[in-house]
Structure formats: structure tokens, C-alpha cells
Image 1 (cartoon, rainbow, N blue to C red):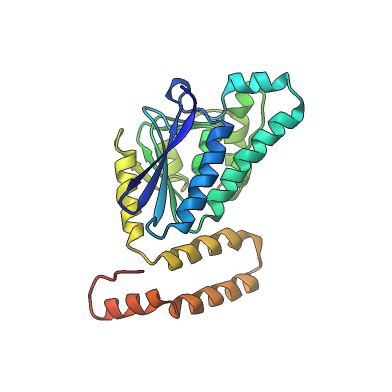
Image 2: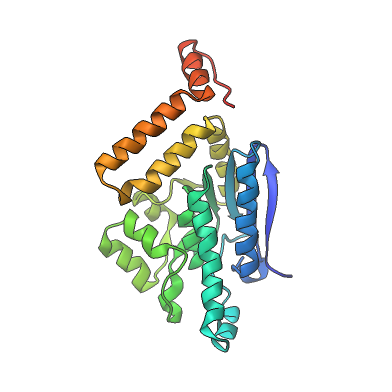
Amino acid sequence: MPAELKSASQGRTLVLTLSNPEFRNALGPEMYAAGVEALNAAERNTDVRSVIITGEGAHFCAGGNLQRLLDNRRKPPEVQSASVDALHGWIEAIRTFPKPVIAAVEGAAAGAGFSLALACDLIVAAENAIFVMAYTTVGLSPDGGASWALGRALPRQLASELLMTGEPIGAARLHELGIVNRVVPAQTALTEALALAERLNERAPNALASVKELLGAAPLVPLEAQLRAEQQHFVRNLHHANGGIGIEAFLARQTPRYE
């Protein structure tokens, strides 16, 4: 059965499921292209307020397909370079997508599967989920933005340990380090992620888009530039219809219904 990315709507949340259970949902170019296409469509669809990425069956994602990587060794380097470009296109699409993206992780999230989870805005992980930067175990270095994400989220020594040793780390420890948002009972990650998504879906979409954009830019610009950006976003959101809806509902002690 070929690897594919399944798409299904759960209310106002789009659920994207990595489906390659024979290989623990290992990734491939067909998934990368489908992921970018799905996010592009979801961005245009005002009925979609959030996205969840999860894996089919007992695992989130085993990373790259090692057999495919072996085959690519017999081809020109440009072949693997194009494949990594496609993965990185999906990672960038997740990072710049203006709506919340949540990873719902069961079982293993290894290699590029771990990178994919790190690209999401929030991570809900089962208590028995295992994360591992498995690249050096097979003589490789990270891709999918792993060094960028971990290098920003953790002290250098901790990021080095995860990326260099390739040793597994549990969901509870990643929660302590501030990388995993929720640790939940096994087999409930998707259910809990849907509940979290629905809470986000109740918020003003334009405000969430601003938060995501501001957080993405914050480490890259000086404080003065970030303050200007916050000012611009704040004023724009105040004069958005949802600004009036939110303030008036709060003052009237009512639940807002954002556009």
C-alpha cells in the first residue's frame, strides 16, 4: 500500500493523517506535496480554523523511509536534494500557515517525524510516546528544521545531546522542557488534540494569525522592530470586525462568535 496523506474534516478542524502503517508512517515525497496542497486549500477555506497532523495506527511517524534512502544513494545527489527540498517546503508551509497546527503524537516520532512535530505550533503527546532524533544512528544529519527548532527551544547542550546521541526521549521529559504542550493517556492524543483545536477555533482567527506571525519573527528582529510589528497587528485587529465582537461580548459577559 503506497504512503499517503489522508485528509478529513472534524467540525472546523482539518485532520491530516500520515498513512504508511507498514513502515510506521514513514514519510515520502508524495506526502510532502499532499501536505503543502492540503494547507494551501485550508488557508483559503474559511470553514477551517485549525489543522491537526497525526499518524495512522500505533505510531506518529518513523521519519524517512530507509529503503528509499538506500535507493537514492545509487542515484545522483540531486535526487535526494530534491526530496529534502520537498520536505522543507512542507515544513515552511506549516510554519507560515496562518492558522494553528497541532501535532497529535502516539508511539514513535523519529527523525523527520520528530522534525514534523516540532514544526507544529502545539504538540499533544500520549504518555507513552517516544521522540528520537535518529539521524546519527544511521550516519546522517538532521533535516526538516530539527536543528533550527531544537536550537531555539533548548540550551545548546540539550539540543546537542538529542541531535548527536540519537537517544530516545519521552513525552514527559519533553513536557518538562517546554516542547510538548500536553501529555495525555495512550490512544487519546487525537481526541485531546481535537478538544484543544476546538478551544482555539473559538478564538478570533485574525488574532491567532497575528500571534503566529509575531512569534515567528520575534527571534529574528530587534525589540524595536518587534514593538512596531506588535503595534501594527494590534491596531489592525482592533479595527477588524472581530475586535468589536470580542470587546462587546466581554463587556456584556457573553460568549463571542467570531467571524
